[in-house]
Length: 407
Image (cartoon, rainbow, N blue to C red):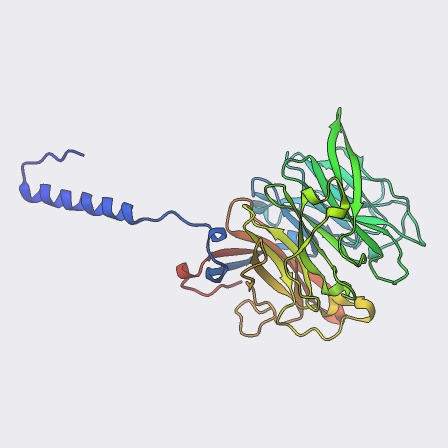
């Protein structure tokens, strides 16, 4: 920059100002994502409750552009339907994407997530000839099959075809596409067990996904059951590079289902032989509830719900009343299981976000490009009933924070 002036003092002042500006720019540091710092430096900067469109939901997932959330919300008739809700349109009741799946609204539809093309949605839909209510809700999934729909709910395709059975009910839950959209990973129930588990016998399922013309199809479907027990598995999806599967399970002998651990397994170990499966237990805490895990956008971190540090003395016979008694918070760890750390204190009286009632963190989803997380918080209301609300949790480097988080 050439400075032209006949006043020496003004020319000197302008030069000093220019140098100061250049120095300031040189000292500016690009913002570092919390994914790239140690977990001990990660802190909650802000907790924001979402509006009434995000109450009484079970599942939550971001659209690929991060501008909308897809949720399953319980209606007035207590059945779940899937909704796509733009964050900028709080308070506007969008029509249910799954409303036209059948002529009856008395069936659950939930556990929805996007196909990478952002034009299709996978979800679990209850069989219309089933009268089941409690065990067909999202995440439980008995008497449910996998369905695909367009982002507007204009067309529907049934992908699995398990018949309704009252003696040995089967079902599906938690479907997730691979990053390239060519694989589908989900949890399936194979039927009742002699152990009497409230979940039945479960397995993890994997299949190729493609379109034959304009019709979607699943091929090369297989199920696998890593570990020694088969009464709890839950699929959470693929790593961002598509090479690993993230799930929960009670993997060790005599481990109760409600002591499940977060596990990861290389996709290559599933093919071609199940005998080569080598899941890694990232938590390895058989007496702690570890559930609802998800990857950060670049795959360096994993967030999940853990009861670690909370006293949960009773969950009912066989864990059947876990929803009324569970207490958990959001935790973070590296994708190799190291640097585990609690992020929230919803059950901690000294934390600013203390919920003042029994609660547990349910499903979560990291924003596709920002340092913020959408979570579902379930909490107890009168008569031991449960309700839920969604929050956005913004993360930052603790060195950058001045104020305490609020909500």
